[in-house]
Length: 121
Length: 107
Image (tube, rainbow over all chains, first blue to last red; front, side, top):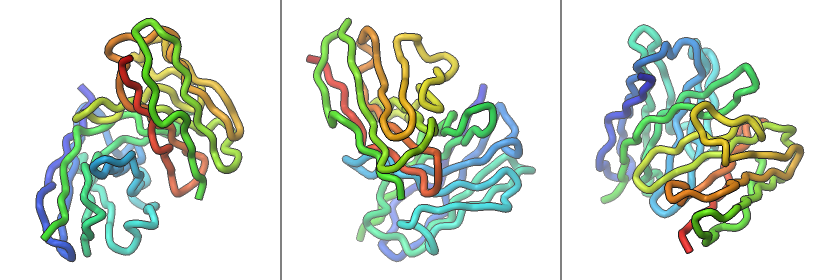
């Protein structure tokens, strides 16, 4: 079964750091771009970051650029998101997602169940 | 950045109804438009990719159309499990952006 499982969420004070992880199973992540998407309470979906198959190219939303870093370990079939200088507005459920490319597909086709991050004092 | 605007923001409908949700891009995005469904407490689910392609396993009552700046998602005959939030998303260029969502509620 193709699956993504996030971990690492929790409560952190504004200005603090947190590292999210995403473990993939049922497919080889080295064949895919991978992504993080979040949904703040009462709001819609917001794309956070994308990372290329080999990690050589990364893209970030302006709202997290310079504070968040996406990385991947293809040998471990996993993806990480290092979040620094967290703000109250970063409070959200964070989803790990597979980003399909090629064959006309350019979308988030597999999603994890999400992990909650709360930045609050 | 490309802004995605969905209409309506919410809609009430009955089982068996035909429902259409519209998504407009602030500039042309060819067919690089995807649709997702999200139920409370669950992860989003890809329904339609590249404007009109049905994702594997998605019922055929869902369909998508459009190109350029105007797109639609149509549910031909609503089923009880279709009451959820729906989002469009453009993959034409970075930053990737989503519409604000449409909440589909039971009348």
